[in-house]
Image (cartoon, rainbow, N blue to C red; front, side, top):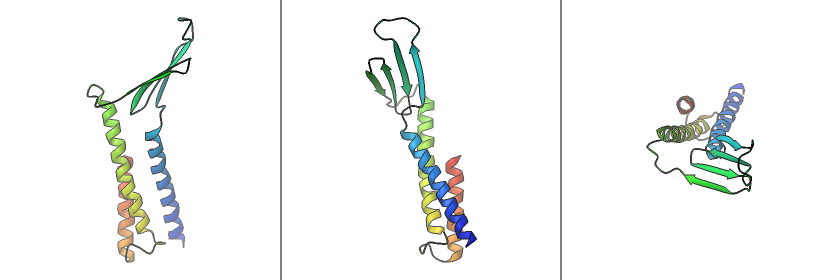
Amino acid sequence: MRKRLIQIFGFLISSLGWLFILCTMAMDYWRISQIGGQGGSFIIKVAWYWSNLWKDCFTDSTAVTNCRDYGVLWNVIYVQAVRGLLICGLTIGFFAVVCCFVGMECTYIGGAEPTKDKLVFSGAVFHFVGGK
């Protein structure tokens, strides 16, 4: 019974972590900076520059937003590297969640006890590799 509770708790924690990383990739406001506010133009008092992994945006005080999507930017290679690492981590994490779900003791799929133990172990290794 204790082994089942530990497996269920570990599965829930690791699945929630994977879901939070997935939500992080879709988040718009990775970097925000405010421009203005101390004088300058009488028309545009304050403007906000914000960006994420997919686009750069500029919003002024009249709530007009101008966005520029990132294409393949070879001059900003770190954006491409972060994108690639996050997508690889999400893919490996997805396989880890599936392996852990199939290998848990409380499920009826996955085969005998030694096979399930190997699946849970491989899922744990995938979680560590996907997180690093």
